[in-house]
Image (cartoon, rainbow, N blue to C red; front, side, top):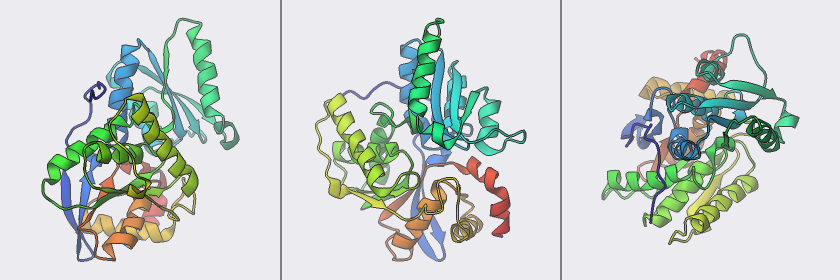
Length: 320
């Protein structure tokens, strides 16, 4: 097996911590510690994608997401680090007082096009049309789909499982839970568990797409990477569980009950969660595992995104 090459940008391996919440212990894998500027799970994917972009002599990266997209901010930062320009196609509106990830994306020099929700449904076509236009002027664009969730990008989380396996040693952990936006992190872990022969249930808390759509996306990615790289492993759907119902307020919003939980957790552990991803995933983790005294068996994957909290700071402060 030949693992695709990457540019080393992330601080790896990330640590596993044993924390206590409301008197109960739980394990957390701190992928929010991958780096200050491009912290979170996105950089593991981007290491492979940006290597490929440089190899193909690209000078500009196109990618997309919401205006508070962690992936877009991480892409802008990481691309600047390796000498590439970035254009972001964002679902949302510009602001003279841009906050959180949008503020940082601008600071990292990203060119930004804002799209309404209707136009964003065609974002891939929009990116590829503009790529063709720039190609005619001699520019070389490398397009990264939403979330970096491609069969190349998810190698960041295939390799993650090998990292996790080495860290856990004989610890009999039975599963790992994370938020699932575009499904790449989950798909990578699912393939990694099969490839590195680690008996692990992968729990995904869907925050963007409905249960069926995210499951289809995850399984499509797993099938794709196995075919593209001729991997000697087989995925069992029974090793994947979608935990639905924790983003009913919508991807860009978060409810008061979850905000209260985030506040309690931050004040007990010093660990802050974001409104779009980790806050919702931890609400599921708390209900399914901490409250049921199973948190010693299931790891919570902190995928980063704390910067997104700043765009919702009034709501966060209202929960104090």
